[in-house]
Length: 341
Ligand code: SAM
Ligand code: SF4
Image 1 (cartoon, rainbow, N blue to C red):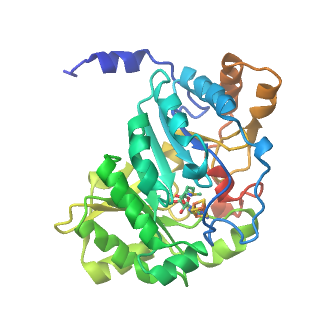
Image 2 (cartoon, rainbow, N blue to C red):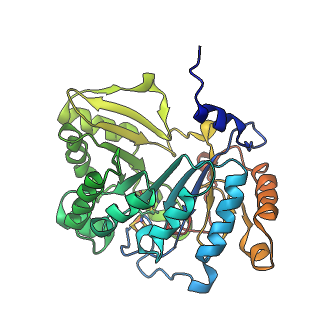
């Protein structure tokens, strides 16, 4: 018999929101800013123009939308961007999310550069864990991928996050042909020494950057082949089931695990449980489809959390089944840094 605790009773009593396909939507990914302290080649054009600050949600506006999400039963939140750690007030935003009723998990996707300073305060405010993006361990190749980043800053950030208890540590690399295919095996080898999960992501096409992204994609199958050739067999974990959006494997004797996120070659739309809030206050129903609803305008006209919850609930009924990259449908209205991944 199931062991019924006060937590399971509380969870059972929480409201639940479903889309038209019966998927339980409880995970909100929140882009806190479209701005970034790097310029990764697969994410944004070099001459990117960021939005004026007054187009972005204020902390209080963001809080009202998060209260609406919480009232709909959202219990998992991921802070992203742009680079979430450059948003002023980031620590207070985490504390506000932690104070919402029913919050189960708060995670952050970050390039890690500011974690050396922020890991500890973020942990104290209630952040559970981080995913840190690191596309190469080689300083020159890392710099070329990010246009000016320093990989030592990122590694320092990873160690600071681990020391602060923002665990389990997950690391992400997007693999781009001609830039970092040779880094796949060295990055996977980190899992032989650390209890980290290293996830390799297939590059996805967006708007102005789509042509570059489509020309440089490396599939998960090729990544697996490269790792096995250099480091030995990868054994599937979880009976081959997805962990979130990743398929997880392990190298023999490794304390850490290797994951593959394959939105292009093996979409995971059937198990999608998420929607996204952009930094300028729209609810985006699918990462790879342009459909969005504007929450900021009603909010600035006086809508309260209850009104926004109703708007969100009816929008979620229009969440598309899945993306159509295979049929050549590419998201055109935003680049990745505006959505947050
Ligand atoms: N700045 C943070 C970072 O880099 O982790 C958070 C925002 S970033 C947009 C979120 C994730 O999206 C990162 O792991 C990044 O590598 C990934 N990403 C960016 N552009 C992508 C693309 N075109 N295809 C696949 N992943 C992408
Ligand atoms: Fe910035 Fe992250 Fe995009 Fe790189 S992937 S440019 S770190 S938002």
